[in-house]
Image 1: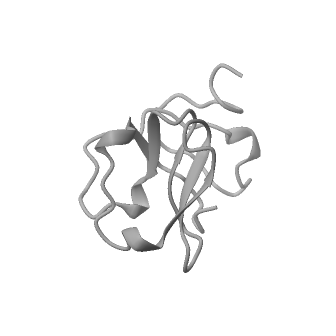
Image 2: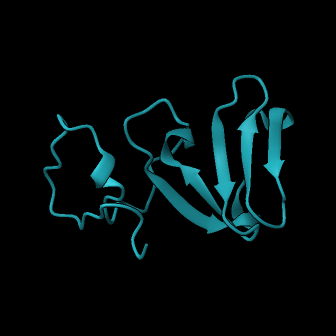
Image 3: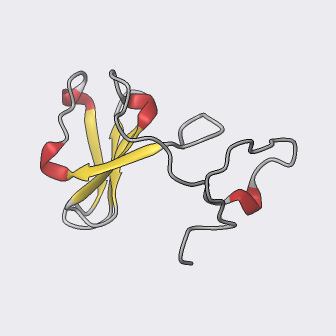
Amino acid sequence: MTGALFLPFGEIERGKLRVTMGADLLMVKGDPDAYHEGRCQACLSLVYWSPDGSRVRVPYGTLIDEPSLKPTAHQFVGSKAPWYEILDDLPQYEERPGS
């Protein structure tokens, strides 16, 4: 999905998201009022996704500035690469928290 080992992301209200470059290439897949993804038409990179149409989750790799929110947990560690060692003290979840 991201071409990376991790998917750090932050969540904000949909109305606060502003695409500053390539907005004309933004392709929305899914229902804009429910679950949907915003992707670049040229390369299909994930720009954001929304679980419900009101909030968006933005991969930190798409941001120009350093995000103000820092990671709070690791999820899906049950399927992480066996050679990768988590070295911080953040909570770890085998799958999604609460599932």
